[in-house]
Image (cartoon, rainbow over all chains, first blue to last red; front, side, top):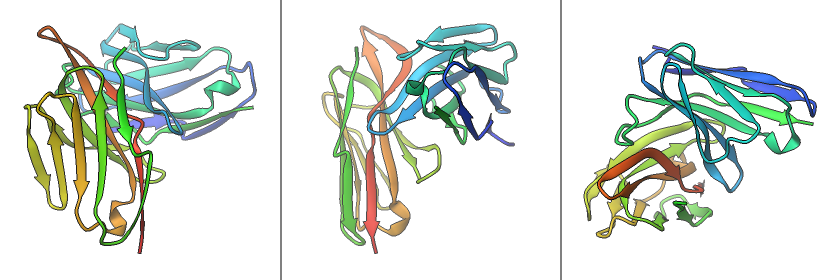
Length: 114
Length: 115
């Protein structure tokens, strides 16, 4: 099992460009999450999904959109990138959303917006 | 909103010294999880605490959950260079019998171990 995978691993964008980050999991987990990690800020939840076809906003959703068309995939989109979105993005999945199940994280995507 | 504060932000120790990181919540938590992130890596689940006053051990690591379920600590005895990384706590908010299901992560404590 690959667990949680993310593509791409690195990306450099210019301000105003758009891109999509892909997260895939092969553990048949219902719940998936997108976090961003910035120095001194810990992990902040951007959006999450409780199942195929459903998404919800997290703590810092502005400037991002997500889609969960297939259970195993969770996409994070930046429509018009800004330098403030320079960060490391982690996708995670869990068996349930009760919070009593561990989250499995992907390797991360390091994004730089110039 | 719920805040989970973690201190210290940085800790530098000599190999063999002990290390402790503390996690404090502004609200009562249903549970708390601890994760470790190696430099350049991703967070990896270590343990979960659910009961008031719970203490769990994993080899040299001791995890505690406060009686009021608002704070937690991770203590490492006799640190080794393999302990280097960032340690995060993550709490699930408890509110009137329901849980929101979204973990709130602390800012993390970056541990450096000098050989």
